[in-house]
Length: 339
Image (cartoon, rainbow, N blue to C red; front, side, top):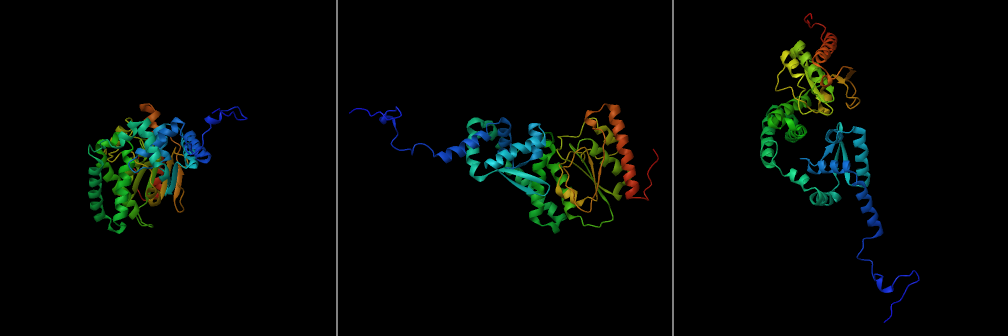
């Protein structure tokens, strides 16, 4: 039997009789598009972070802190992964959260398990409590049950969700892990109080917001509390909270009588903004949502993280002047000490 040579010069016996062994053209294009989207190392890091996150999701701020690139750059890469179908997104309050789309979860897990097993191993490593995930869940459940007694009007689901969200948000800062449960309880109590706050209260609530919640906003909150005491409710938060308060700022906080255990970086939450009467931003741009009925001010002050000891003192004095002016407006009958 002689071989037949086709017009294009190929041997007829080399031609496959069926094409069932190869994926279809359309499928190949979809796969190629997905692989192209994953060919960028930065996107792979983002994907591995989302896949191994405790709740299986992340926001732009989380990924900006991880990759040390700007939030617009992170948003660009997330948009490409979402357009490809690998990620899905959902807006909840202030933030947009990204998750791996259900159809891609198995593929992403296989990819990470094959090429970066350490990424998935970290998901099963002991948590910050030195215990398994199940043990942490049990502790958080007990905490939620206790806090429900203080805020029964919010309901069990809201209290439990707030406790778990608070734990997850703080767990992203590695250096707070040693006291994570205590910090979670403090943060959750604060958030639940904000959720329960009724509008029109006589006690004004002030939210100080900066990027890391490790310097400027902590100083402003401590100064305000030292002057006004329980005549104001003070909150502070960061758009991308640091792992701990700046070392140069801690002595200033202690000098003001601030509770050292309460001075830890906290993420910005939608409930904190809604509960505030006055929102003071310091170098965090337009991250904070603008809600009707709130008073907003932007204070241009230096960053103590970049300052010398003399510079930190000057920044404290600058913030002090601004705080005194604010309190004079909010509490005209407040007797401020002469400096």
